[in-house]
Image 1: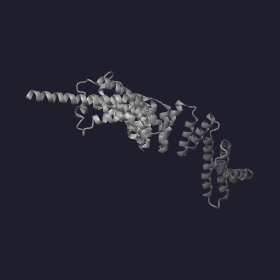
Image 2: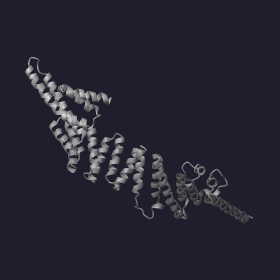
Image 3: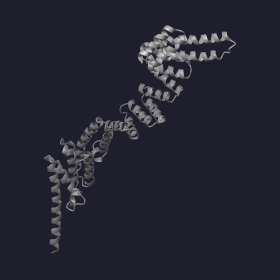
Image 4: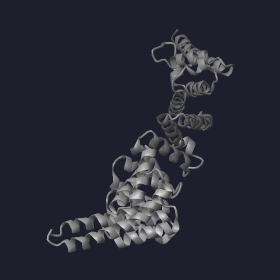
Length: 393
């Protein structure tokens, strides 16, 4: 009697297991015939812990592998009704494959799951690219992160343990940056930089992240690290210079501008920027030389002409202050100092006129010319510039 009871229990257990495996097979069959709604319903029943009929299916690795396949099919489906079956089918698929590997203590399903994971990477890549193009950067970032997580799974890494997917790492950083997740972007970009992916540009992107975080010290350090790795890279040099200029660290800016000019002496922008720095230091002779060099290289350089005109104009204004400080009982001395101011104003005119010729609608240039013409009693030109300003308005 006792032996018969034991035999009955064993038969019942085996029958239940086969019954549950049959439900998994049914779910897979629904998937293969394109009935994804029924496939999802069937597979979810097999892993419902509250359902007393699930029995062994919830701990059977194959159950979770099939679940992953079904949710991948949901993602791939062109039918809108099927796409609505899950908000994030590829994450569900990934979680299912991971669960299958976790339960597979006898290593019976690892090879087939590895194939599914490889296919899943393809789907996640497509999802990431589509999300990025749709400017859904957080979704793109998450997809790239899931690819990276798959590539770290021991089963997947087994064939090439040292492989590093720098493209995905970099793209994760790019998506994070666009999603304004700057700490994550820095993390991924730094990994890419470690493997020299995208060269000096990656250091520039890391620096941009720090600038967005208002951390100019770290931004500057990254750029300097990049210059050590990629000596004299023009892009990194310019960004270092811009940080120093924006921070009003004139001496440091000039130092790096000298390096930039040594490497690219025909770059008019470098000479102009250096002139601006000397202008700030009130080293007018050096500033003048730099502006003239910029004009020599680029004959229609509006900013260089305007700054040169402004430089002489400002020297004239300062000289007017000197003249006005002369005591009233020294009229000859006053005239002498005032004439010195007029000399500077006259020097400003050709540069301001050239700037106006290059950009006839710039209001600041026109205002400067109006003042200069009036100051020097050039009344015909004064009337002409006023008329131009009226027409512009």
